[in-house]
Image (cartoon, rainbow, N blue to C red; front, side, top):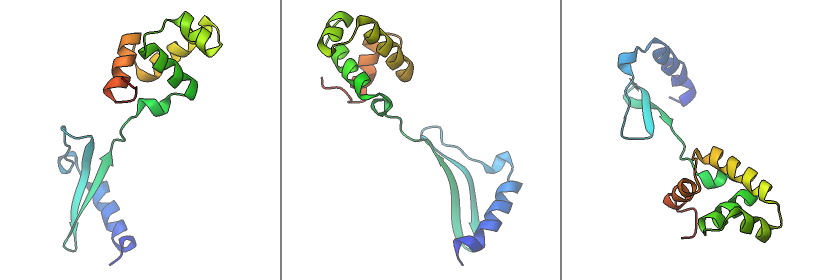
Length: 120
């Protein structure tokens, strides 16, 4: 029996499932939302939460600025080093804060260090 043969049966069972058939795992980022036995085979429908990597969300310039902030440089020094204005550095920092859901330079650095994304 192929997957295409059992798919209609799985869909029918899923449509008729009640909330009591759904189990979740609070300790994991994966969640079993449905399970069923068909012809002696146990099937699981699992929702997987992708791991978030904040570093991948940042542009190359944002990564450079985050690294310089982590090194302790103020906006004025970062601006001079990168050849941009202090206002541009501030704009980048606001965007980085929003992407990482933080409100301070220290929190940004801690989050990136905690995920091993900055050279310490």
